[in-house]
Every structure is written in structure tokens, then in C-alpha cells.
Amino acid sequence: MSFPMADPDRRDFLTSREAIGHVQLPAWPRSNKSLRLVELDVEWVRFSTLNHRTKAEQQREAQRQGQDDLFSSDPLGPTAQEVQLAILAGQQKFDELKEDLRKRDQQEPAIVTADGVLINGNRRTAALRMLLREGHLKCQYVRCLVLPGDATPEEILLLEAELQVARDFREDYSWINEAMMIEELYELSDRDWEQVSVRMHRPRREVQGLYEKLLLVQQLVNQSQGARLPIDFTDNESAFDELAKHIRTLPATEAAGVKNAYFLGIVSGVNYRQLRHLRREDSEALVAKELRSEATLEGLVAAASTGWLDDVENDPLSDLLGDDEPQDTVVEDILGLIVTRRPEAVVELADGSGVPMQSVLRSLSGAVSAAAQEADERSREQNTVDAPFQRTEKALRELNRLPALLRSSRAHSGWDEDAFQDELDRMEKLLAQLRESS
Image (cartoon, rainbow, N blue to C red; front, side):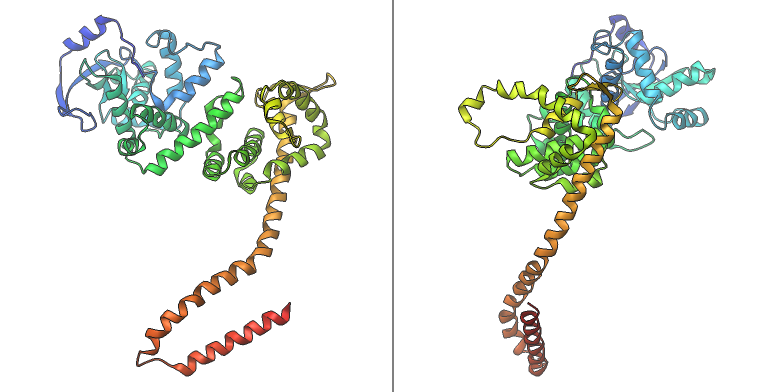
């Protein structure tokens, strides 16, 4: 994380800007927490393109415009700044924020670097800038605290993390953007989860869980070869959360199978409540069976298998490891085919015909949902079989505790031995009924 240096004239201008006061900023990691408070023109300050609140949205805009370096080649230039303004203005509750600023003015100062780049208050400044452009002249200036000229990128990241913890009128980070911040803090902290937990003021299991979900998202994004971005999966947090927790301790082969089934369901739009039934060892086999039995997917199965067989045959590990049994890779094959295509694309089949991606996704969603339903039914049947044993085991555990309890209970003056013998008689009658019912 490195903040770009602006024109030296900007730093000189800000240094010479008259302070209207000094304010203590508790979140600033240094011992001297007193910062200069100045008023700056809302068109002069620069939005931070490294703000973690908008990191995923920036990736999407760079892809849309076909310019990978949109926010890195000239982050403080007019093009990147106007796109960043549009991103901020497009966030939820932005209109409410604008209205609040119009009525009550700015209540808390923003924070800028010595070059005038916003570290905190990007959305508020964007709202003030939009209000000014709409003719509200009282919104021409934004009050800002100015960080020292030698502030490091690491200090700025820690400051952002600390400020992110405080909840006020600001829009919450999306879980994807928050996980990206945690990922950066994790590396900054020498991969020490305890430090990340302290800096985020969150339990270790919570920040580590967000990171694990992000790793799964990144796997799917990498597999898409640029067709998908992390922001595309913002609405799938529950699915990634349940998947991450389930596969955490599974053997690699079983984890890969569950992950393939889940990924195919996520990409095709299956609800996470249905996907949770696929958290079982045979999940990939169940999905494969439904894919092969769905007539509308016959051409897709053929196209996916054809495209991937060459890779399998050329695998240098095949001869070394051998293959006792051929693996049904239809789930992995189809996932590899569709995840590399955008929803508006057309999928070319083996016979040369094309099928709209939306039609393919609907068919896949139906197949994965059917597999999840069958998994649920199998689990219910298994629960019916296992339930008597589970209850018997529970009853035996309680009975095993009785001898130790009886010794102290029988020594008590209020003990009723006859009543206890009646209870034993009831138990014997129940055991006789259980034997007879077989």
C-alpha cells in the first residue's frame, strides 16, 4: 500500500494554509494526536483511490473501461478522480448523506494527507462536492485534519482500520472490501492473527473467517480468468461463510468436491439455504448425476468434457500417480467452462450451436437445486436411521452417572428409596417394550 505523491506545490499550499484550530485524533497511532484543522476547497482535495471501502468497485470500473491501470497510472488526475466520485455517489445511502449535509452542514472533520489526499471523509466530501455543483454555495469548503508530512502508508492503513471500527453516519464497508483490508493488515502484521484482531477490535475467529471467505472468492475469481471480480460475489457472503467453515478441517479431496459443487451453485444463482444441503462427502457425485440426467444440459456436458479432456491427458502427473478409477469430472468441467464467461455471453456447444448464458445458468441452477434436494432427503433418511442410536447413547451417558449420584443421594435424610425403585421398574418395562417392538 503506497500513497502517490502529489505535486509539491500542493504540499506547500497545505503547509501554508491557515489553521482554524487543532483537534485530538485518538485513532492516530502516534503519541502526539493533535492535528491541524483547516478549511479546504472541496474541488481541491483529492479522493483516495486506495480507500478499502471502494476497492472492489474500482476493480469493476477498471474492467468496464478496459483500463487495468485506471486508478494507478494517475490516481490524482481528473479521470481517476471523476470515476472515484461516481463510485462514491453510487453507494447506498449517499442521497441521505447529501440531504443530511445540506440541512446540518459538516459535523465532523475529514482527514487528509500532507498532499491533500482524503484518508477519511471521502463520501462526505463527495456529497459536499455534488451539492456545490448543484448550486449550494455554502458547501464550497470541507474542514479537514491534516496528517504529518512523514505519515507512512502503514500508519495510514492502521488509521483507516481504526476509523472503520467507529460506526457513525458512514456507509458500512461491504464484506468483500472489509476482507481485503483484513488481508492487507494480515500481511502488515507478519501474518499474526492476534495483531489483526486487536487492530480491528474484532474477535480473532471473526477476522480470520472473513479472510478465509475472501480466499474462496479469490479462487473462483482466478478460475474465471478475468470474467468475474470479487464484487460480483458480494451477495453470496452466507454461501462462502458456510462453505469456509465446513471445509476447514476436511481432507483435501473431499473439500475440493464440496467446493466444486458449491461454486457451481453460487455461479448459477442457487440460494445458500439450498446449497447448505451439499455439505457432505458425496455432494459432487450428486450434482454430477443431476447434470448428466438433465436433457437441456447434454450439449453443455459434451462441450465442457471435450474442452477439458486434453488438459487431463497432458497432465504430467498422470503417468506418475496413475489412475485406479476414472474420476467423473463433469462438475469441475462445467464450472471451468461457465465461470470464464460473463452472464451476457453465448456458450458455444460441441455441435457448433450457441446457447445464451442465462439459459445455461437457469438449467444449471435447476440441476444443482435438485441435487441439494436429494442430499436433504438422504440426510433426513440417515437421521431417521441414526436417531434411535443417538438417543440410546445419550440415555446411557446419563445412566452411567447414576451410581456416583446415588451414593450421596441415599445418604440424604429426604431420600425416598421406594420412589426410586418405582422409577427403575418403569425403566425395565420400557426396555421390555423396546425389545418386543423389534
